[in-house]
Amino acid sequence: MRVPSEVIEELGRSLGVEVSVVEGFVDWLLSDYLVRYPSVGLLRLVIDVLRSGDARVVRFRRALGINSTLGVEVNINNPLFSRLLTAVRSVVRALAKTGVIEYIEDLGVVNLGSKQV
Image (tube, rainbow, N blue to C red; front, top):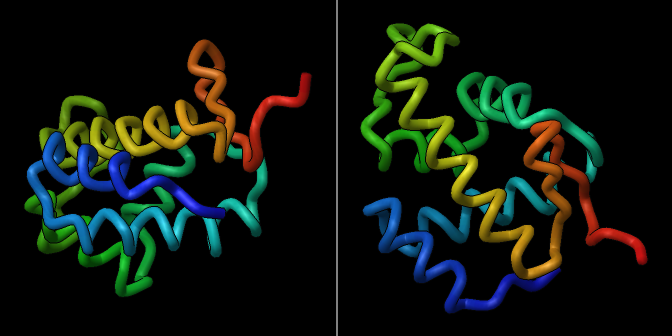
């Protein structure tokens, strides 16, 4: 699945991370994660991003200032977890706008592929 470079660049700017970091994370999300879990809740996705040992995901977390997952509680009041949630949600929303994935925000559900009409 191809994501327009403008979308990747805008995500990099808005998240304050290098474009290559966003590219790697999006590649992992589309090529590895959502292939394995084609429908997943946003919170589950964020927890899996937090726990993943994949180099692309680790690089994404580090770019967001999460150098170690040991001090990150799965709690919306934890500033590092909240930052990760916000970043992952931004990526998901941007990808949904391109039609690469479907994001049902009211339910917090991410689906691989676009909505079927």
